[in-house]
Image 1: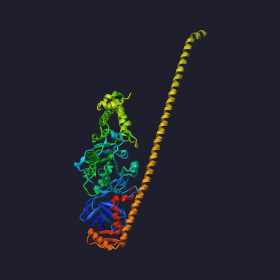
Image 2: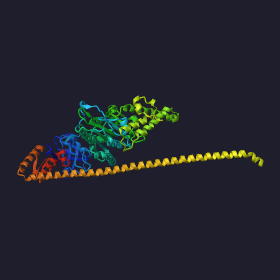
Image 3: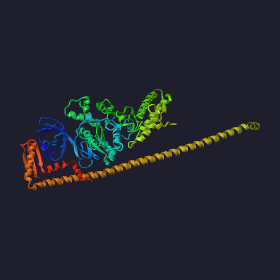
Length: 457
Length: 170
């Protein structure tokens, strides 16, 4: 097959739901990209779900409404979907497979790349290092996001995880180095998508961001492509154009549900909760595309957001994600203020590589450890207070309770449009630990305490 | 009676003095209370005014941001639409230029070459007919190869990739 004379197959044997069964095909492979042309000249697109001898089953993205077996022509691309890549994506708003939604021309690129991509070559992978500052105090101070890291946000229905993801996407930066955000919205309602677009608008206008919107009423097969497309775009920006790229994937639970539906249409044997048995390796094939590469300046950092169905952290989606990602930011209803980050259940395993002297602040790691230790002690004191009453607690325990309250009100609570600088986050963090007597702060060095501690009188 | 009154006079005087002192103290305390209440009310009013001012300013900022976002989005939509139109016009011009090849003396050779191309791609058994707008369409059982001139022009524009972005590059 050549680009100049592609073969169109006209032997449509059957139309069923979103599937087209094409007969008489030659050399068509699994997962191949297909273009379906109707009698009216309208073009639709699809993916090959299954092939058997001269038969190919194509799932049509736009559905088969209005298609007739006669007069429909199907052309196969000769390989899986490829998309143009390059800086042309920046500032654009497209649907889940890259078609413009902003009224502009198709996205054009100097090169094209297979959407399925490849995980990074492990021998060329560099460990994550240096921070991506999100402007969210609870994340920057306690679970620092590191360039090249994959850090998941675990949430439950009804919590503002999407707002948090959009806020991070709108205000994250890498302190002066070239930076870009690729936001893949997966299975969102129209209202949520509009709100994400509004939040990201300034970054889009500045040409620092690309937004892919797969809506809840878009076909599931497109939902399976969306995160892959986002990562393909990000890889080129990072490793060819040398930018640090943050890829936000929200909501990955919708992606997994789409994968389950496609797997079921393919007649595969279901595993836990009817998700396909390869869910783990499929998720890994996405998350492992992030990282840094030896000798190249850019990086791809992935922030997948997922909702835990019924708040169940043992559900296959959060469970398998947790095995792959390098930590998690857990949102909880027990935390009364936005962004609802539960500090004691959140962890960034790569934080040591992204925070500390020469990266954020010399005392960062000690201060974060001290805050977490104090919050753990405050939790014990609160449990005791429930039994005996707060007035029966010792003076020190009461100070710990006051510290936990200060943590919630001063450091954690943040407006949805508020970007906090690292300086402000640290100033607030010191105000929080300064609620405790100095002798309790055993994890901080005397020099750091002299510089930052301000005991309340 | 007079004797009793006279005898009690110091007590009465003391009681009156005590009552006056108490009254003075109460008046002073009431005055202090009033001052305190007044100061608190003033502080509360000042705080409420400041808060309302801050809220108003925040709302103003939010509204200004929304207006800025909308204006920016409109401006970018106009620019992007213009780009799309330019690309569509280039496609039209390309189709016109390629279909004009019908009048070229080399056109029969082109048709021959396209026939070879179509058969190489779709199979030697395909039946070839000429397309009304130039070029050929080869058809067989369940297969079709469109090498009409408009289709070829469209493919050529698609193959341009980022080259086409030079249309609107500064």
